[in-house]
Length: 140
Image (cartoon, rainbow, N blue to C red; front, side, top):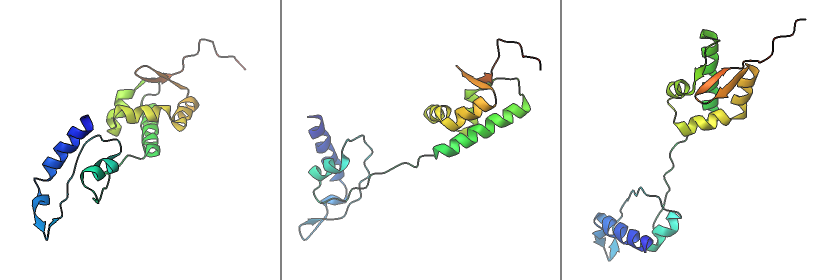
């Protein structure tokens, strides 16, 4: 029922455009840009507009490896500026102009985790801090 209603509304809306213009009994060309969450969009539109051309719009996704490199560069600079200070995740996110989801992928990336480990940093709830050993160093 939901799919049928959506198809009906799309048909009505799109036909208010140049689809109503006909030439020799055929509908004129019409470009329709539909923004919606539709499972199998091509099959969905084939039901409404047989013989249509369907192109799924795909947003450019940032290169995840590039985000990792940017995050590492940010942390390296923070380590140089204030090596004993914790690094806030929010500061990294803001500096990269990234979303929370983007940064979650970065923080789980093996390259980023390896970088933290090599620099003796550990993750905590809101950022990263130097690993504090519970043991005194062993003298040589």
